[in-house]
Image (cartoon, rainbow over all chains, first blue to last red; front, side, top):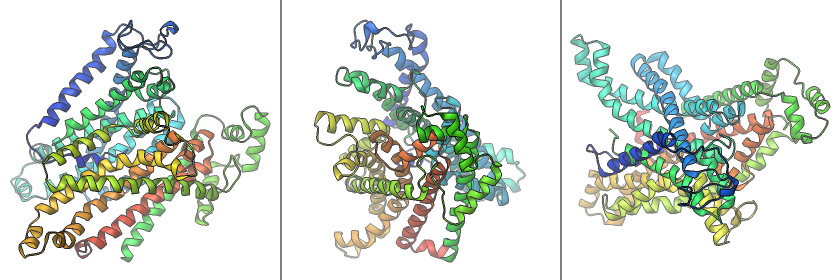
Length: 274
Length: 312
């Protein structure tokens, strides 16, 4: 569950390349489906109709129905909203403390930094998934621990990147000059630090969201995350898997949706690396 | 060098204490009575549970103050005694040995497979940055990274077990059974390592020292061997550390998916059964593995790039 590796896919490029355009387009489509979908689609994602069990795509049901006869298009829309929402909240919960602590460490240095470094090292030394699993054991199938566990593992990357970058920026001679000219910390932050770390944080955020989407669906798929009947994309795949022979498309739909969500976020973050 | 080992030892100690404390506190505040859970894990949920739970409680001293139990755990850890599994009654160290062994095989097989795929693909991409091979390689890597490991595992299972019937979908013991879980992990790893290799190769090919090596008359293979490989290897090796983290975390997912009897599978089971010594032991081993891998990677990097030693 590390997003470090995602940095490797970014290439230094200033202009908005075709990859990012494709990513942005994909994300607009998918977020539209996730936000507007559940409102527009009238069917209840939990309503069962055994008569329509495994209904084919394109009949009475737009994208077919699952083994309980639940509308797949409704379940996919709700699942996408859930994944998106969880990922967004997780990202915020990781980014806000991560960036603030990173700034604090770079600004103060000394013992503050050493203490934060220790905490970060310890968190990094714990397998992230283990932390999530332990917290999940508190309340199986709940959003709270899942979200908290993910945020606890992801904040370190925001902290580290912010700290390192801010330190580099602050060490440059023109900052010294600005300080000597009497500009305050606030001015230096807004005019010198923010423009540098801003794009990096945006990139990290997109990657953190991708990581969160994968993590939530993975944990649900190995049945320690959110439990059915919650329309979660990962558990939908596993639920529908026994019916693969009769309705292969039904299994592929949620899998494709996860794939597109993660792909969109990764493409969106391409080329933002400073 | 002494300082380096001391720092790593300290890190390992901190990890041990924090993992122990965290597991201990978390498991104690979990809902449900610990003794009850253990009894259910040992004798099955239909046994006369209250009676069994009382017996378990007395046997394990669960009624004593929590702080005392924790200090006791630390004490026995210092003697390299991880205690006994609350469910099976066997020594945790023994159980971990068996499971860790299985996981290490899986991880090694995955790493090997990924090294056969990733760096070679990356080399082709890096030789001509921006070329067709590079673009295909990038697209492949991004695609494979966007597929969650469990979906990858399911796809492989469906294709190789169900459609083609070549490989068993689950089990343990023969190389045939390790292949699918290892390949699941390897494809994710190769997606990453191919990019690292590609970037490293491209950077070396662009570097002035490489141009100079050619300019002074070295043949291409000699230039690559003397000035290219070592420099290109540095980022790849330091990236292996991160790959190991991916591996250890991936192991949990893939083992659960393929019912492979390794350490990740054990951790999930131990949490469900509230087998505190097992959870602590498993988490501890995972934490120490991170430290060990980090140390190993640092050592290799140091060996590859002596400049770091001088500035350190």
